[in-house]
Image (cartoon, rainbow, N blue to C red; front, side, top):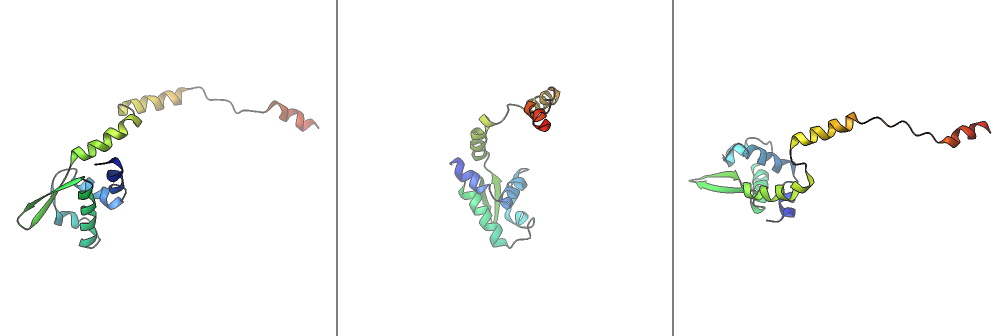
Length: 119
């Protein structure tokens, strides 16, 4: 899978919500459909897009289709993003704290403004 395909599939809010629903484990399609007010074909299309991008996989059990997250695909996206992110969340907090402890810069005043007002 390419990062562009994964990002495009996750670009839709409904598809991101589906991924969030599947975060806790495998779900049947009917359980996913119940979480939305859209028609079943609309959700089915979202599931197809996620499946085509390799983000979810399916397992058939009789007439039921179960969806689950393909963590390896999401790892591709994570690997691509990792150079842009700090190593640990604690690092973000420490950087923000350091910035807040820096002395505040004084407002810059143009020295010529004083002379301009005299004329």
